[in-house]
Amino acid sequence: MAGSNAIRGARVGSGPMGEKDHGSRAERTMISYWDALGNETVRYFASDVSPEEIPELIDCPASGLPAGRDKANPPQVLKNEPYKTHLAYVKERRTEEEAVELLDAALDKLRARRGTARRKA
Image (cartoon, rainbow, N blue to C red; front, side, top):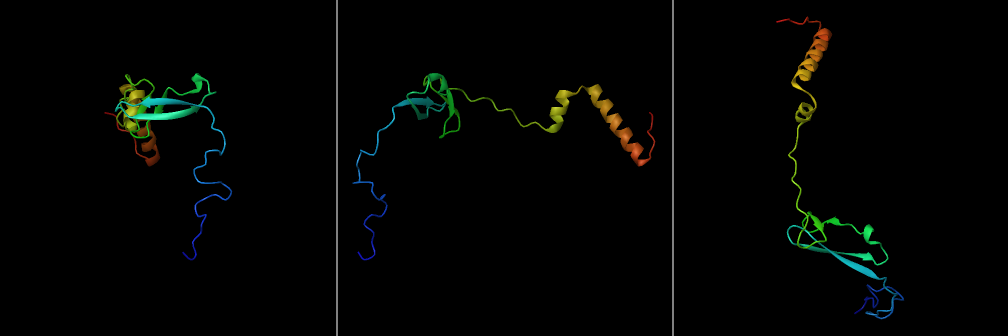
């Protein structure tokens, strides 16, 4: 075994492997969260954290769904809104009459820049 290192992977001064006296553990509170698929996620919080500071909902790392503390009633997935185009948002904000006025104003401006007169019907 020429060239081997007897302490490879161990921290110098760490003591024998498996030693449990490396400090005291802080008191912790275990909170379980469940998502709509039944996945459980456990989070640990310091026991001196007030209950108001512990979140009611988290994102489940396994599914990406919201997870809550109530196993019987996990939070449901919110319905995703379909992608809206810019035109769809404009149509939400403007009436048909406003759209016609804006279009006419833009066409007048364009025609003036090009030097063509507006045709009246």
